[in-house]
Image: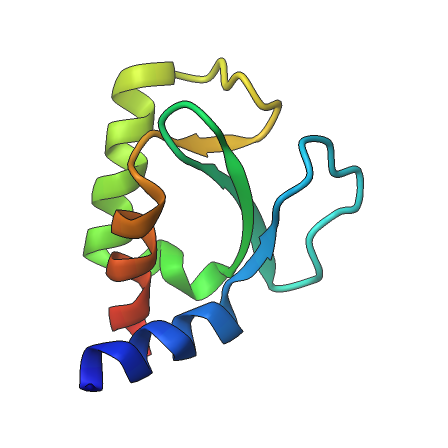
Length: 92
């Protein structure tokens, strides 16, 4: 039950955009990341996540796979979407 509440809380904080092309910039204090292995979803997350060790590990995975050439013209995190939501739901 607690896991379900934390996942619901994560959905409120994470802004999820499912369209393939999004041209709007992330609001001040947030950054957009693309998450997924084959189909990518755009999430808008608080920049405070950058200081979290587990988020930094996801960014390290991204660096290993893509370097500075991201396929979505934005920061791409190559992990399953449910893993990303699970990791970020613990930051609150």
